[in-house]
Length: 123
Image 1 (cartoon, helix red, strand yellow):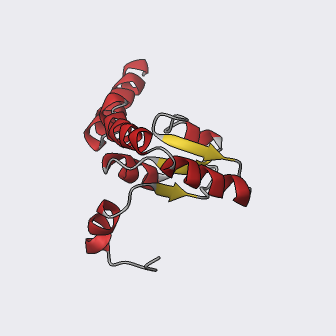
Image 2: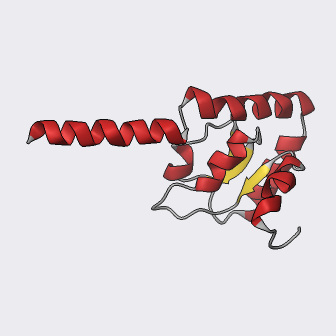
């Protein structure tokens, strides 16, 4: 555990890990770090709640655990590392998720423009 890391070193630190951990997330917002983890081909051990399930898929790019359940969290981490071939598949799928689901800033901008045009067309 490194503690706070300067922003310019984040990519280097993420590159050094095999699995990303998302032990908690606010329930009312999109957990942005998850997108960064996926883009860097890191499968995620994540708290099981609706906004993480909107992004992640159990067994494909993530393993979930119930909020606040430390034992289940540890078990999910251990399970992630118990099968190297599965970990490698999940890493590839994590990166692929970004493109397959169009979790890209350019696509987000297109969606905003499309929504604005649809709203203007109603007037």
